Image 1 (cartoon, helix red, strand yellow):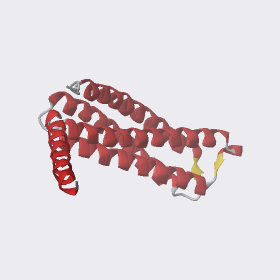
Image 2: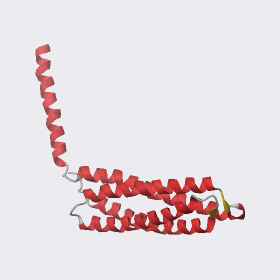
Image 3: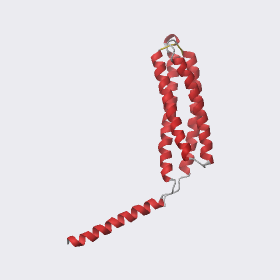
Image 4: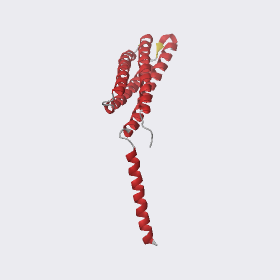
Amino acid sequence: MSHLSRPSIALAFFAILFSASSANAQRDAGSKIRGEYNFYGGAASRSMRGALEYSRDYRQYAQTAPEKKVNPEVAREAADTIGDYISKAQKHMAWMRKQAAGDKQTLTSLDVIDKNLADAAKSHHEMHETCLKDNVDAAASMDCCKVIDASLSKAIAEHDKLMKHLAATKPTAK
């Protein structure tokens, strides 16, 4: 009986091996990249939204600070976190750009996102310089946050459109 089970096991092994290779053959070449687009795209979205939330929260704090006196530690923490999130979003967008070579529509969207992230980073740099001072200028730091918010809102809107486009280009399963 043990001799009969060995051929059965071998047959089952080859059947599993064959079905796995045919399942992989049904996946198109871009399926791996789209999965990574989803990961990096999601990470970029979370980073941009995190920066936007921190910026909005800081602006709300600065508006309501007693006598418009901003605690320098709070200002530095907010500026550092906003900068970290913007940098992470830029890193994820750079990865997506490498994968999009030759895809004009995706590259056009990435150009818009990158421009807005660069604008947000520039305003963040100004905010960071303002927040390093012992006497943080609440109005000046809030003005930087307004530009950061506007730039990030545009980048997020374009990113959302891009991710919908990429999801729509996914072929249907066979």
